[in-house]
Image 1 (cartoon, one colour):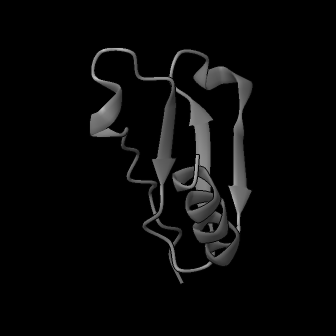
Image 2 (cartoon, rainbow, N blue to C red; image 1 turned 180 degrees about the vertical axis):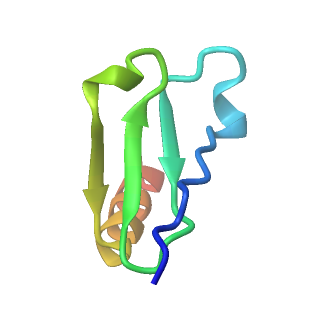
Length: 60
């Protein structure tokens, strides 16, 4: 199986102040990185964990 190239994207809500990029085009992980400091690495979480985080963040 070939590795998937991350499809990095930012939220449309951030406008020109993009801080975080997310790549969720792999079925087994969601990757997150700092837009301005990409060399600092990435964080990978399971998709179910990412969904739980988004639901929590939406609640404010």
